[in-house]
Image 1: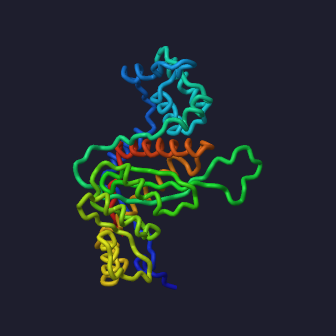
Image 2: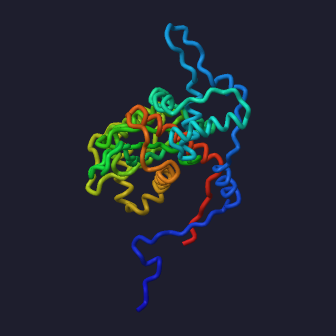
Image 3: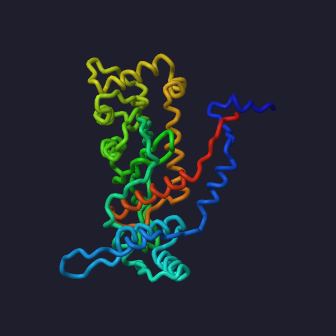
Length: 318
């Protein structure tokens, strides 16, 4: 019996090779580097300034809480082990530095607010890739987890060129994928040239939000419409992009449209989702919604740091 060739399979898995293996391997090694340094500016900002109000004053600034939580998430340490790690680190460095205990870390996590992503500066319009995934919620001390385990939906917006996460949001599980898109676009200060997302984002609200984000420029929206999608007879300026996608798919076919339009680059955001669940984890530790939102923002910031250390430059070989 002769087996079919690899190219004869309907959905054959492609094989890739990495061009910059030496640089990528060096970046992977740096991710596990235990070298930790504290600048004078960080030491000065470690303690919280006096608020000027009567009552108890905060001992630790937000910088100290964020640094402790970041170390715990990178090395997958529970809060008590994170506290012990920081105390031993301060002892080795011979620093008279107050270390927040695990209860303070848990309490201050949900009060950190919005965490700014440090991105590489750019003056060019960016191509956004948007996708969502589910993250499990901590169920507490239950002997048997429930069958329908509660989870949250994580939404990520990734820069197609740099691979960095530029915006993130966390919503309840029943929220439609298209609902948080306007909020994601508001988090981005750079001009947007194009937006790519899967068919779950094919809604009027997404096209209108992309049109408003263009500020007079045309924003290319690459979202595959449904199989039986019909042209809008009197489309608005925003929905003209949807009609354009429908006409192109009818003319080229879906597979050729994916390649010709640049929609195939959307796989990069799926790769980011895979990296998130592999490096950070598939579940969240915090039990409150505010704490969970801060947790995913910290995780996105950590992934951006690892992205800047080095990413593979792969090419298809078969």
